[in-house]
Amino acid sequence: MQIQNDISLKPYNTFGIDVSAKHFVSVSSVEDLKAIFSSEEFPQKFILGGGSNMLLTKNIDALVIHLNLKGKQILSKTDTEVYVESQAGENWHEFVLWTLDKDFGGLENLSLIPGNVGTSPIQNIGAYGVELKDTFHSCKALNLKTLELETFTNSECKFDYRNSIFKQEAKGHYIITSVVFRLSVKNHDLHTNYGAISSELEHMKVQQPTIQDVSKAVISIRQSKLPNPKEIGNSGSFFKNPIISKASFLKLQENFPEIPSYKVSDTEVKVPAGWLIEQAGFKGKTFGTYGVHKKQALVLVNYGDAKGTEILALSQLIQKTIARIFDINIEAEVNII
Image (tube, rainbow, N blue to C red):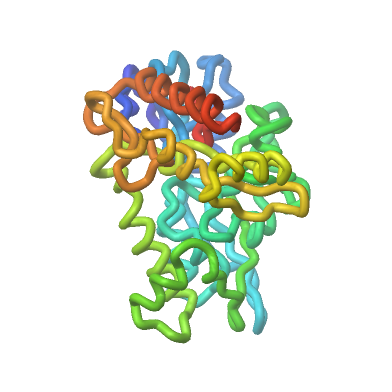
């Protein structure tokens, strides 16, 4: 464990924003993590996981702790289900592929989501009709006050749409070190009716899809719509899909009859933020070295050496425009630092 000074964080965030860390350390064990937090040498600390769900707008005047805990294992298995554990520093997509390789079902719709396993419960990541909470069993997290590991069950995490206890009352008080998932071993429950999965499976000429087929379809769809962060800096979906009252939606529908929606409850609907942004004229729009992706309006991109403050200003312009046109407030899904 070596502490470095004045390190660029450009390789450590998928937006490719070039800001620096005053101090930097990569941590590969819980013991090292405890040692750092028990030390008073660096009073200001900043946790960095996969760097996929953040927009850095300034230099970090603190000790940046890169969480690099590795390892995955099968905890227990029956004829119908299996419990698997992954350490927080494992790449999410690689972990999903590992489960699929063993024919464990449940995570296939979440293929190719950027980031690490440790940050997945914080956001309650989701895609194509499936959310992390559907297969999440528990996680271990380091209490930064007591420096003891605590276990959070599914209900204790208070999962909501792109939300959890770790974004609310537990924010800044815990670091997730490992996550346990409950997955299926056979009779997998496939979710193919959301988005373009069914049509993509038809295009693949698959009539009786497996979980691996669903994963391949999801990967194909995502690759056709979303830019690869290694090629174009981005953080995936920048905004949450807003949930509004059914009454508000019906009123909107009078002026925008083609507005799409997904039922949330008898009184609420979810409106695709990407559709709103596209209708407002932002899809594919560029501002020098940054802009809105040409294939997916939800994705803000860094084409070169854009500053985080520039991308932040663009996101705020989009929010104001959507509020003016549709009277809908869209929230950022990424963390603004």
